[in-house]
Picture 1 (cartoon, one colour):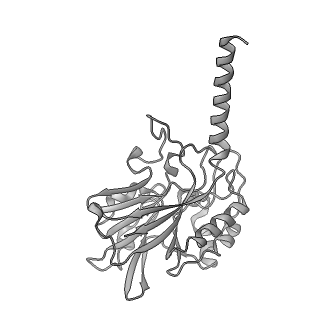
Picture 2: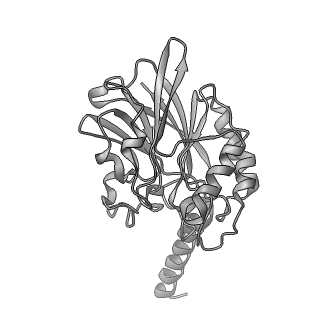
Picture 3: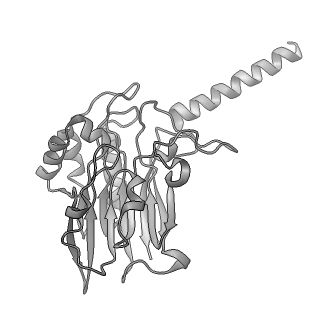
Length: 277
């Protein structure tokens, strides 16, 4: 074999291996990833530590996210023993290559088994709204999952309370912040959650910590180039992980499923487990 053919063979094999990794190995995996969350300069965010499991962008029905995978997500989340579970939207799929639609009733029936002492709460994502936001909300509510769309509630724990605020997805609608914070007392350090992180700058200082999803971490991260595509008007600024700005903290989960193209590269699917200081 000539040197040119050898090089061509090596290149083809390398590209094939990368494609296999990005289109099968990585997107088919799931893991629990712990993140230590503190305010700016390492300051505490709330009066007591809080352990939060975030399930973002489940996209049940996408390639590699079948019923057995959803069951595994539930089992892994429960095994992590979080204080609180937040479902950050996009339970269903729209237009994912190779995907097969899974009904929200099937998905909700499985998410019903999630357990946490402080409860399980949800917001609606853009794919959910494109399908039917009211239908999605009703299915989740029917199995005991509280959906917070521009609403808040107070969660009691020991001798302390946590104010949880759910904000509508800013990608597909205009959140009603007046309604969302109507019952939040002045001076409260609230835990806020939503689907798209783009609303972060608009949220009041009341949101000491905001949790979001939607970006999938870009699904692909490349050396030197970073994340070529991030579905956010802020680009890579709020693509993934912990961000501190204007005295507030934002955590963006890279999520579990895939959107449009079933590929992940260096952005492993995860259940985000936040250890809030």
